[in-house]
Image 1 (tube, rainbow, N blue to C red):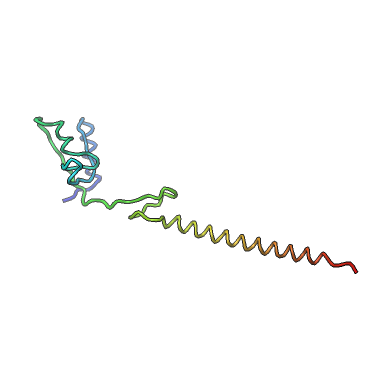
Image 2 (tube, helix red, strand yellow):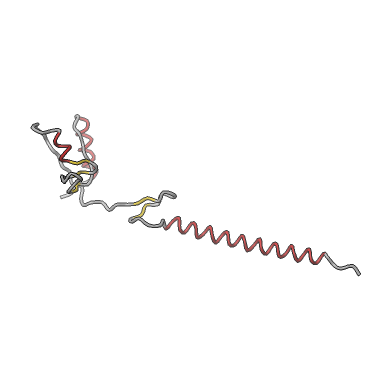
Length: 125
């Protein structure tokens, strides 16, 4: 049964204070060497350091595997899957609409100027 992550964090801090090592991460099998892996640590290799020693092993299950997230490198938006960032996509679309609006305003301004200049150029009689 999972325990509260805050309680697990407190237990880990107490363990560190008394000189124990604390490993945290998702438990997976198999690792690259075919052993169990906790986070980035291959447990087979890690536990080999303690062969023939008395140990106390404390496991604090925090629940199921957390879903992997992806963060946009531009705006920092966190997404549940690797995809085009929806926030950046909307920002680009908004910027494109604003550019189009400004282009239309400038085109209208140039037309108005052109009409004004043509109006001022009356042929001499």
